[in-house]
Amino acid sequence: MDKYQGYIAQIREEQAMRMENLKKYFPFFQIADNSLEQFQNGKYSRIDMGYTLMAILRMFIEENNFNDTGVSYRDYHAFLESFLAKEFGLRLDREESAQIAAYIFDKIKNDGKPFTYTYYDPEIKKEKAARVWLIKSNFFEGSIYYYITETGIEFYLNTKEFKEESKISIQQLLLEKMIKSRNFRGGREVVRRICNEVNKLKMEKRSVLNVLSHDLKEGIRLYDEFFQNSVRWFDEEHDLFMKNAALIGGAMNMLSPLEQVKNREEIFLLDGELKTAIARHSELLAECMDLKKKADAFVEQGKLNSIRSVFYFKQYMELLMDRDSSSGLENLVSPLLLPHVKKIFDLNRIDDLFLLHPGLEEETEELKEAREADYVYDDELEEARISGNFSRLLKLLFEMFKKEGEFELKDWNRYLEERFGKRIFVNGDYYSFLVQLCQKQEYHIKQAAEKPSTAFEGLLAAYYLEQSGTGDMTDFRLTMLPEDELELPSAFTVTNIRFEKAP
Image (tube, rainbow, N blue to C red):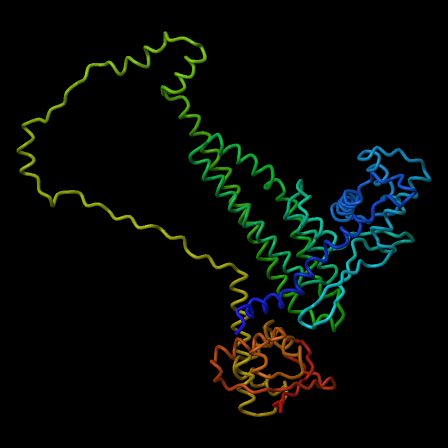
């Protein structure tokens, strides 16, 4: 067996995802390579296109997301003119300014076409093309306004240029873009990054508290830095959390009925993860208020310690060296020349030694190292609940196959109602299960266990392994019956489905 086979397979599986992640950087290098040497006979060749692009992206982020306004071409032109004058010393007349602004804008917009990034996908053995936009336009009230795309924001964030703003706030701006563009799966990844930032701040808070406990001066410096760089953004971050929560709450209303069925589960999962992030952010705020109280207590204690009569020999020695005087050495030497007092053992205490009983010795208490209890987060509980419910529904589905061989969704619903009552139809996991079930029309158990291609096949594979391959599982197919709609007790309507064993 080829010793390289294992990780070559892993490289092949990850290649498409890695290339997809690289596409956000492709427009920058395309634009940066287009220098201005060929424009106007190199008159503006000293302008750096990469630096200019980053400046323009920052302006779009500021206006689109912080000021919540679109950018007109006039706004862009005014900014570019000011930027070129300040950074490159260009004083342009009206015609020159218009020409250079139009040229640079066309390069950033790629003449209205997407930047096309081509790469080889080893899974399908073909070339694939990824399309990237940095700027998109929108016609509103008779004028054209321009907006930075989520790819543009993500590229700017990944270059670590946005240092003066809260990282959590910036990630939330990206989340807002993804919700509005209906990229709910990508939004979940952004929320996870927000949770990571919150966890980093919690660790930083613990580090500050640890330093405060043994080095007050350094601890106060770190404390001030922590509050200046992190805590002062809490109000803005909270407002953005509430704004995104409201967007997710109304996400279903933005979708068509077909899109609602397709995205219901992703919206539900995104909503749960965002609620978890909000809860952790609130915990961080409470911990920071506690840090403030403890820092005040440490400062108060430090003031009390500073008025105690303490003689620092090292500090006094340095003072004498600065004065270049030996007259004060007496204060250092005299304690060493005091009479040496000999200490002897009192003979009268010998009898006490013989009368001492070992049993009267004080028993020492054995100290056991305290262990921090494992904390289970809300999102982990949520995932465990969904996984458990899906496994139960899958088991009951195969029980129905064993019992009936061929049946319809309405028959299975009656079976579920006998087991759980009508409350099963107000459980969101039931509908999520149906959405995942309908991703394909035919399922083959062993094929799904070896290489699952959908979320439901991943569920089949896990159930197959749980049953050690001996469970009562059968290959099956689904046939939609769109003319037959089922009214459920929860006031929802679903399309009937016929379940048959696959040949």
